[in-house]
Image 1: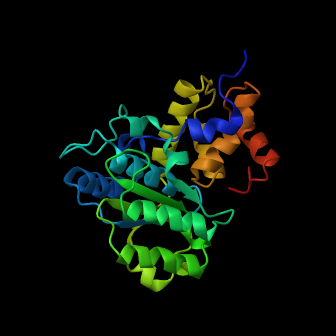
Image 2: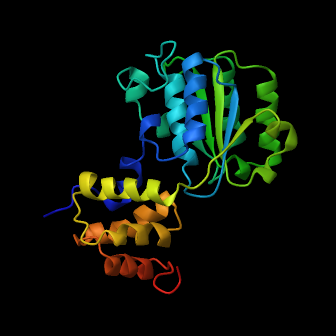
Amino acid sequence: MENKHRIADLLTELRPERFSEIVGQEVIKRQLTSMVAKDTVPNGIMFTGTWGAGKTTLAGVLAQALACEGWKPGRHEPCGACDCCRIPAYSTYFVSSSMGLPDERLRDRLCTVKYAQNMWGGRKAVLMVDDLDNLPPRQQRMIRSSLDERWPRGALIVTVMDASKIEPPLRQRLIEMPVMPPLLPELATWLKDIAQNRLGMVIKEEKAVDELVRVAQFNFRSVLKLLSPIYEAQEPLTVAAVRDAARQNGYGCEGEL
């Protein structure tokens, strides 16, 4: 039987699109959903944390909720039905700094949110910058200067791995939200649901789930990276399969956990 999901697309296909779908992060979710429902989200929010902890997912869902045309007081989830919600969030108002960001492109995006020239047609103009700490000081100053000019209907949402690389004047203008790796029970429950209900895999050994989570060091991306070769080979999820996948991908396995 041919697999229905392409391995390279697993992370995109399985990424949550609503706050209720996000694993763990209960404190942050309560804060964000309350601010969205009351329409009190500040102009700038910065999600900090390690690689694969879920920063970009939280940022993306928040951006979608803010831009959603179907928002009403008391509502915090994206409606999923308006034009803005139907546009892929991660390609519409998402800017990655990992490959370098031209000044002109950044200036154009800042102008868009500053004047709410919302090309996406949503409630708010949202600029989402992934890995803000990769931007040089010059571009960080551009962002800070734009924020100081006020964005009446705009919002800046950024993710950061190393907050020490953010210039203090800009950091002071952003509300920081530390994103912690999920707990073992949270990630194990999510993995079982993904494997069985979304991918149609057979979990032959229950302890294989905890083993995979530990080997992946509680990292969402690493979990899917280790799960992928098992799924691709159409094998059941066992401890042996997890350890084979770990060796193939250079992770520590038995005796190294």
